Image (tube, rainbow, N blue to C red; front, side):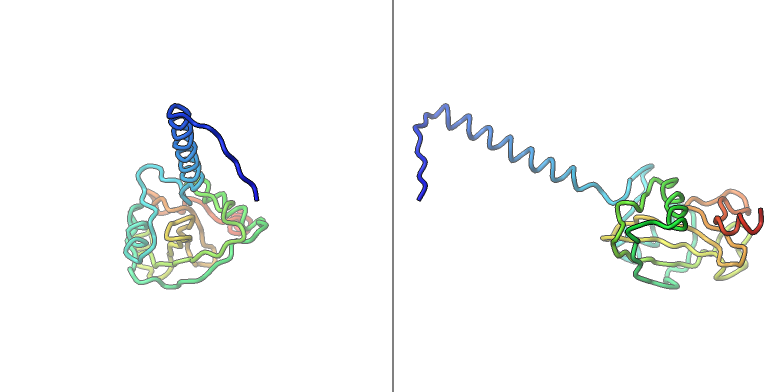
Length: 176
């Protein structure tokens, strides 16, 4: 058995109590700051996506009108090592202040919605889609894309003209 004894005065106890409070406060602060949000909240965008209403509201923040029922919901495994395709996709994410690097090896959900108001595609149902990647009720990535053969893909921002903002590398190779 191990016994420790010491003499203490009220002054020593007060110092120890204060040190303990500072230590607990530092541990709490370190824990909270270490639990960074899975996405950056830049320019007032709400990244909550735990419910369908929140997912629809997220996409709507960028000016998109969508069918409120998803076309597809799928579990996706973010690979531990990014291929060129994932590296290119993550570049789109980084341009929107998101990054899939910290989700390597994790399972996320991809929600796909039909976009109804893409410039130049208003009368082409089902051609333009918005995909959002959700982890722990928060958007961590996604895109707006065309499912046409010579389609395109870009971030959530709505283009001001009917031409796509960014084409996929595969499209650039076949058209360029």
